[in-house]
Length: 134
Image (cartoon, rainbow, N blue to C red; front, side, top):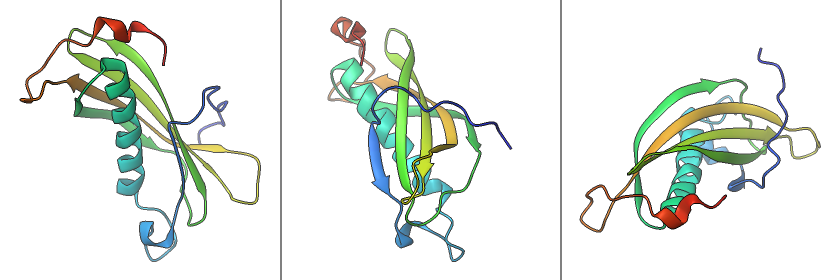
């Protein structure tokens, strides 16, 4: 079992409650549902950072550390860790909190790569104005 790591100091990108439709018959939330939240959060960060449309091109280093149960609050946090000419690397963490508790636990993490694209879907430079902190 991975040790508890400190919750990110930033505000979450996304925060939702896990619902029964998001779970298997045992009440565990589907990993795909969690990855979808993480991809959505990373996509919001990529669009904001690149000042326009950005698409997911890769997801690496996924680790599921703990299960998420129906009723848990799920918060997604992220950090733009690297910016290239047209691409961005975004580290995303998902945390769970039982609805009746204060303590949160990291449940998964992944590294997403996004490419900024124009209206025709062709790679475009990441806006130079995007160098500001999120």
